[in-house]
Amino acid sequence: MQKIIVSVSFGKDSLAMLLKIIETKMFQIDEAVFYNTGMEFKAIYEIRDRVKIILAENNIKYTELKPNKSFLYTMLKKPVNHRNGTKSNGYQWCGGRCRWGTTEKLKVLDKYCKDDIQLVGIACDEPKRLSRINKIKNKIAPLVSLKMTEKDCLEYCYNKGFYWEENGIRLYDILDRVSCWCCANKNLKELSNYRKYLPEYWDNLKFLQTKISRPFKKKYTIFDLEEKFKEQV
Ligand code: SF4
Image 1 (tube, protein in one colour):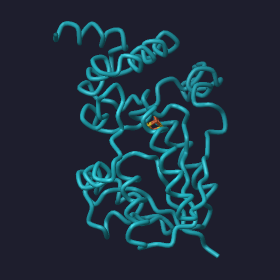
Image 2 (tube, rainbow, N blue to C red):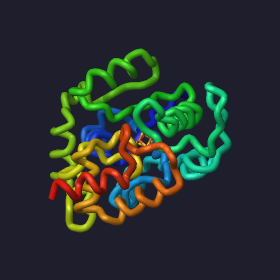
Image 3 (cartoon, protein in one colour):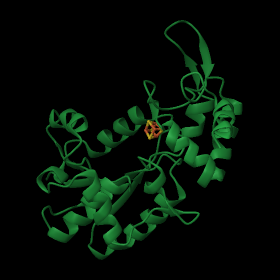
């Protein structure tokens, strides 16, 4: 029989979807699946551990999936032959046009879920992402029928006592998305906030940049950005 699987990243939207479905019983969930890149924020892992208790109380199976090779291996070491004939060690930064981590995530999740129904946490005010999943027959975005926007999801999670706190800061106060901490999709405002409020992640980015030749953001390496942000103080 086709199972109902909730795909949860423990960010605001998928967490709101999961908790709301448990609350309203709009679906009988068989399983919750988390794809753990290994590069999530500490706050995400803390929320995962709290939610695992809620899942167990509701007799919902919890499954954690991982990349086939570690994220850091693929980023820094995997031998890569590029179309233009050049070679590199690793795909380097993930994000922008080179979202190799997302490609693998979708592959691993789809392979695991096969023809089961996947509930995905896309808010009702994300038309671009919704148009992509609307074309896939076994993926459903319950936040649409729940009429929950991204803002609603965050408020709902806060009301349930989930704050994504690190260093006394709520991550959603300083970041637009709480995705992998090394995500090259982070914008300059978010990166400046890393440096200011999350220095341990900023140091991690600097360490990665010492191993990666490609600049993190267009022409800027993390070290260039550090200088740029210093000038802005
Ligand atoms: S969140 Fe960013 S770094 Fe992580 S897999 Fe997606 S695109 Fe890659």
